[in-house]
Image (cartoon, rainbow, N blue to C red; front, side, top):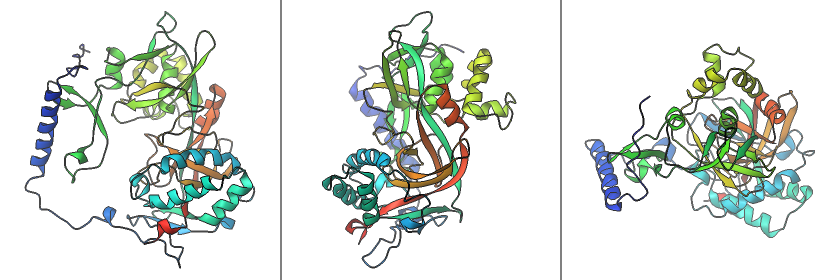
Length: 423
């Protein structure tokens, strides 16, 4: 592959040029919309939903008819009276601190339109009452929330997988052993939202770079690995396979040569679509169906390093990291994840910070019936009933557990019953 041109967007790029670039970009978007008939009628996704009143317990219905909510009572949830709710309390308190700062009408602007104020009122009560035990938390939930089953296309069943915080070996300096760079967020990576330029365009975060005064997609995984990019190298790893797995999981604990450990958290991505290495190896016949657990995949990659390097680049998405001093890995909501109590969801449907009652099975077919908090997202986590259960932190033994989970199941979303949900 030919050498990449160095990005013209250096740190010291003239601000006037930047303004001109975005002005031109906005003009093109506006021109593209010319000639279209204006329609002031709200789309189904924009229509407001029925709200809970003082006399009813109707759920906040989603705008799309294919997705609906069905109300239940806590006594209908299996294992509700036996779950150790105290384990979920700390994580939810972290989420509450984020929710209290939200200024949107609906949490996360998700399609399941839960009024932000309703959760903010519940969070204020939780903090004011200084709840610290599982018994207190159970009484609080039963007094302030109702569970609603999420149903999509008339089915309450969805897919549930698991992820974990990986473990890698790394060094602050490059050596013959530690030769693979772990990049921080690039200096030339630009973030923009088409909706900021034209309200009729999608409200979506996109990333790119500037080349010859044009906004173009950022470099792919292959381009990043084969050429130097304008990004800080925060550490050097001893295994490109471990780094790749860390990127899939989103975070890792790095052990340095002197025994110290540092936590690497997600910082950003290059904006390209994600394609799982398991799918790639299955499509090309390197592994057989039923053998695509993350543990088996890692073993295969280590036995076939040359093929592994080529096939891992089929996933164009690249994750950038940062060194974190948090007590645990940081999820998309910006709060530490808790083993067995945090879940990644599709934020398009499920708002971050929402309490969920999860019913599924683990990698050894054991029942998982517990309270979790929606605190993270994932490239492969798409759909109204889709979850990625956070297993915890560890090495290959945890990878084996987390990588084997691929179960059907369902979940309930807990919606506050207070004045924030009333017209």
